[in-house]
Image 1 (cartoon, rainbow, N blue to C red):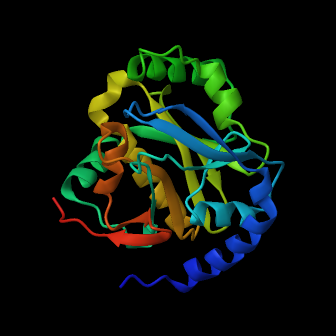
Image 2: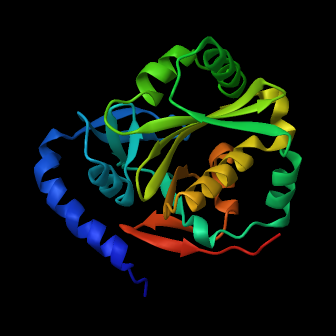
Image 3: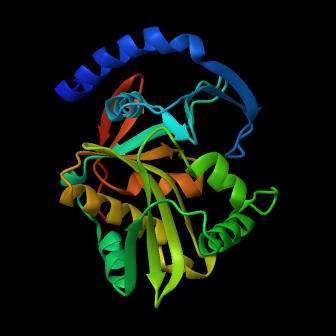
Length: 252
């Protein structure tokens, strides 16, 4: 039997009341799967004006994600690969590889600031997109204007620099008791640094310092390498059958 925590029970009760008010504004949109799985992706989504921090928290706790000013959940008829994943930073136990990643990146400078549509950011984001998704005409300007920037919740960037040069950038939403990892891009030439792993460890440390209990990492997709590394953080929680369920893996 899987028991819901008091926090999740409270969120579920409050979110049910929200659904009664918001469901009429949500629509289903069918598109090609953005993760290149052989299924039609169905986004259940709605556009929002600014929402209170607690409302955003309730959506995250109910498995929803943010894309620009849009909140959405996946309702794909023939696929259930996208599983929301979150961490409790205070529970996180690093394995040997994650500790090595921390040591390997001690020479990086870490900056916190507002989301910036700067030439430096755009250049690195475009380099990342061109390397990671060469088959699509993805443009950094479109990612910032349509995905990263938002007017509905508080968000910020975490920038990683090597001797002053930008090598990674995370876009995150932040509340009093939650952080939502929206996107992370990095210099493909620095792939050996495992910057994706280092970024999550940095987010977890930030949450610990700010006494934030819930770190949402987006989707875990077992069959997609760029998405399944998130499961190496243990313990982690997956949103399955309408509940957050703990997963503990052996340490390596």
